[in-house]
Image (cartoon, rainbow, N blue to C red; front, side, top):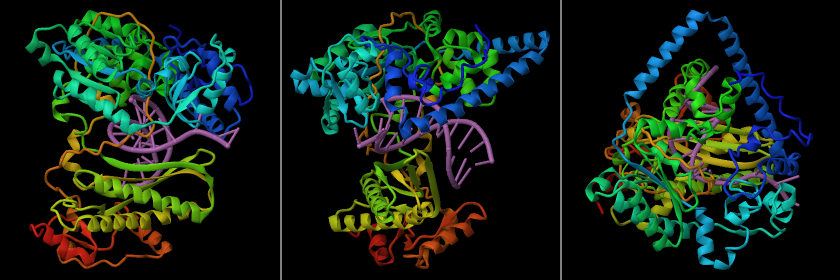
Length: 614
DNA sequence: TACATACAC
DNA sequence: CATGGTGTATGTA
């Protein structure tokens, strides 16, 4: 109700113990089921333990910036509103009503979607294989970061995405966070992704029987469209999902939770209602959906993170979806022109996007748009050391590009750095011709391993040559992380429409429901370095990107730059930058058949490969 | 295009 | 001793 009241006090400076936690320290949206610890005490505890770290200092700065921005917009909003006449306000209100009405027309209640989420997945697998752990507080991860915590650990306030060294202290001193648990030692388990992947495959085998086009969002989460299955088998969604969950449990020994709803967004939110080991359905009526949405804190909307939540709170004084809907006019004014505006309007009505599952197909069928590798290490400033790490990253990226299907070649390469101060920088370079592998790499027998190794080494070297100067630019520096990324893949256009995204993924059709008991929520925020899905749709034709350069390719003058002096390369970049984009010509020749660049000495062999020259 | 942000898992 | 890694979308210049 409160209008954008003058925002809460500014972020407490580091050091003030009590009002300490800024909104990001409470990114915890609500007390989890059976958490047994007081959320505020946990936030204060975490803050207290880390307030002097570089990480926290950096976070405080970011938060202050974000907070100031939100408050500024809030103020402008108030001014604008004060200036509006009754007439204007009324007419605006009518306009909004009409817009909501229009959105309502797109509501689709004809389908039944389901989201399945494995309970504390990684921890569950480990405990299954080592039952003696069941009664102990367990965390998957390490002192740096926790991926998943079992429910015992949660009673101590331990959560996914929490730094491990702090979790250790909470378990040793439960009283500090209001937990009645006895002091104990947190058990850490190093993640075993191969094992989790194996279990995930077993669950997917089951999911597939209910929806051959289901979509796996991660190892522990899947989206299914049950519409066809239910029609074919004449069973209720509730029964089908219960059966499916029973089968998952029987097969893997691990429980899961599920949400059922008329669209993916609603199903997703519902899946959180009765975990662990429970399911919840939002019935397919407009009334049920609205009733379900209305009591939801906006933070529960997939796509609404802590920043947007805070903006909505500061600028609109809104906490729940019901309030959001009631404040539609102000939402529009606050986020006008941004995607966020339509996203929020639709979301608070329980509207989402759907189908699409067919197109994306199963599991890893969505073409990736970038590939990267980054590593955190003990802050380092020695150039030689940093160069060595950069080379390792280039090698890893090269290998991953080679292992992709089809093998990748991209026109943009980037270097990411994070200073010991946690300041992050990204520098990218656009190339005329993609760096990477020919689409035929690895095919047609022969050459085999030796050739593969050679090619991988070549790509590694090229990436390094491009990025080493970029790193050089930052010296002197004190870095704690470096990352290498390649994007703008050769055949991106062929698969562009397959891209998925979180918001668009949830925007579009209708919904509804009924339901509702809320239980506890408990995001099992898994994940630490998920294995990258290496499955990519074989992208059809090679709509190669570098049309413009095609001309100089067939005859191709072997461009020499095999090894430009650093400064030289940099200058070239700057020169080319004047016009459109910075593009650098790489060494090697361009294959007249596939357009990919290959080393001169391999040109013949490469081209022959296109003609079945095994 | 380049870069920073936000978000999800 | 001391806050991860991979990927996508979006906003702004």
